[in-house]
Image: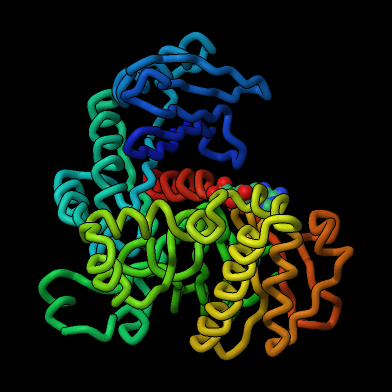
Length: 394
Ligand code: AMP
């Protein structure tokens, strides 16, 4: 019998959804609700290559989900075939090293992680609760950004601060983008026919950016920390900085700690450095004439290469370096800039491969030199797969 899985990714003012047949890797339908709670609220759908957009002014999450379900009916999609709903949840703290079927205890645990991810977990929990209400007898599955990194050894996840901060307040590195890192690592293993002892570094470069060292299929180090602010330069996030800067800027500007933290999250990274945009395409286009755009790209690439070298500390070999995410998948220029900093590791870009990676199975480096490649990420598919695995194994 056909069964379907709904994948749901709920943010504070938006949500993404995809409907899959449980044994397929392409969604039947996918869509996005944006600017919820505002006059501009709207919902877009893609179904059988047709795109449609609806204005739903002032709709909140619940109203928008009901609108989506009504559209399912209009499209003759039988919602009784939906057997489970898979939710992206950003922070699972130290509770979860795998996806889990949601029950009251899980919801309590997620709520207790909310102060570690105040921008994300409350919205994720809200999404689960709305779906529990609408689909009363259907299992809800939580798939965590942090779960894949729960294998980090203690020396990689502890900060060198008062140990009581870890014991009393769970201050430690958790890592994020785990679903993406795990997915592209599994893809690399399959494509390259690697054995179980493979080791690799995966580099997710989107608006958020992180990299991960993976040994024997397990995350052993990653660049994001207690929150997604640590690590690489990102679209609007600063990545690693000297923590003393917070006090220094507070003294100089009278900004509060909250305001500075917001600046580090929303007005730093590529946007802060360039003063122009958080969007890499815009910066690359401007960089020939705009020195600030160029320096933002230079810092982005240099710091990324430096972090790749640091991640290599956890490995004894690198079978492959994998680029993914909007920038990693689409910008041959950024990939080349980064690999040029990594001559010490032996990387040599083959321009033809790099410019047309899809024709070369993703490979971008010269034959008989250390391998770097591009693999398209698919976090929704990973959530669907985990959801299917959990409901059919129970
Ligand atoms: P994501 O968050 O994965 O959707 O990635 C968004 C980022 O990918 C933005 O900074 C985009 O500018 C960037 N991006 C998408 N396509 C390209 C491209 N062809 N060249 C450079 N950056 C790109």
